[in-house]
Image 1 (cartoon, helix red, strand yellow):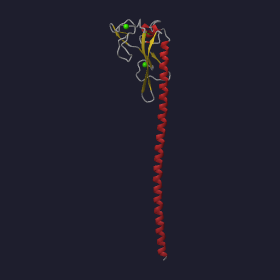
Image 2 (tube, helix red, strand yellow):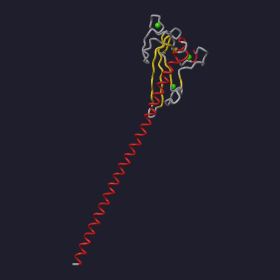
Image 3 (tube, rainbow, N blue to C red):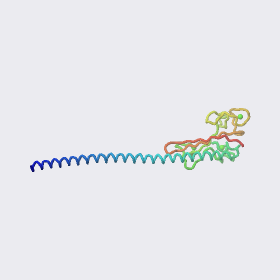
Image 4 (cartoon, protein in one colour):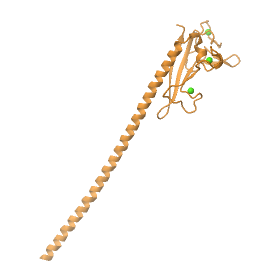
Length: 199
Ligand SMILES: [Ca+2]
Ligand SMILES: [Ca+2]
Ligand SMILES: [Ca+2]
């Protein structure tokens, strides 16, 4: 009888031992899965934070760009209207106060980095409807259909819409203030357009 009892105890011990190993293995699997889920959650959470930071920075840059573009349009409005084109075009030779004395077409915006390869190294640019006049000299054109300026239009009010240079006698002046900057993940741009007049 004692031998049978011992045999029974060994069987129970063996059964307990097997259950213990089974439970232990199952627990490790659960822990492993739980850790994996936690790691995934941490990764997703950190990506959400990074994305949020980039998004906030992008919005802040866009807001800064829009404010800068509007301020630039206002700066043009308060200038002597007849001089606006010569003051803010890209040609330094026609500057009213002497060559190279005018602000010109490019302007920097604090907090906005120019895009890689930017020609003048600043994010802001002022554009007018300019094109070849006569022997290929650039001038202010009222018949230019490119650039989104809303032309052709009789800018100097002489009743004609032609290819003459109206830089000296324009009465209406279409302008585009464009900003191109390096955003958090890609290059960004923004344009504000206006028609200036003497009034
Ligand atoms: Ca100029
Ligand atoms: Ca530029
Ligand atoms: Ca005209």
